[in-house]
Image (cartoon, rainbow, N blue to C red; front, side, top):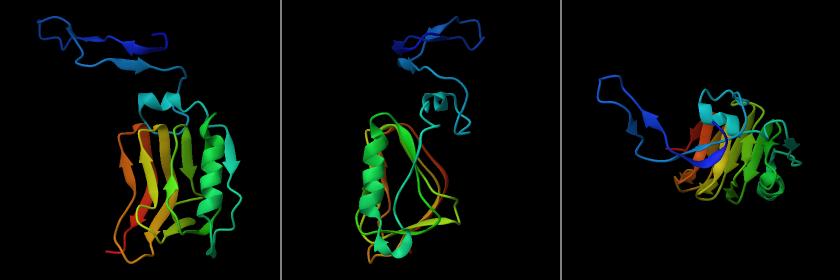
Length: 166
């Protein structure tokens, strides 16, 4: 198939009734393989997986890291990329807003911790090719709210631990 924003797909389940048009159009994207090892065909769209930006932030548990991390997310959103967080405890005094074509990646589920103090530590709505991987998210505030992740396409959570404090 060639890349297109709208392909009509016919499916046949072999019961003799013949092919039927799929009830929705699908997008065919360029790329091949599964660069992030997600195990799904649409992962081939993460063609930017080789572009990694190391977030310049201390993640020492006391300094607010949210502005530095948000700046890194914003800087790779246009061309796409992975924002790599260092090991340690990243303090989030403000919510992070994810963008299309961005993966936020820690150094490991038990190596990088995002300790959030405000409601909704990570927000993503209407984004495409967006994901979170390899970190722990811990609520350090007084309310029990978690990430908001809605109406995104080709999105994922991979090796994420969430402790909402409940």
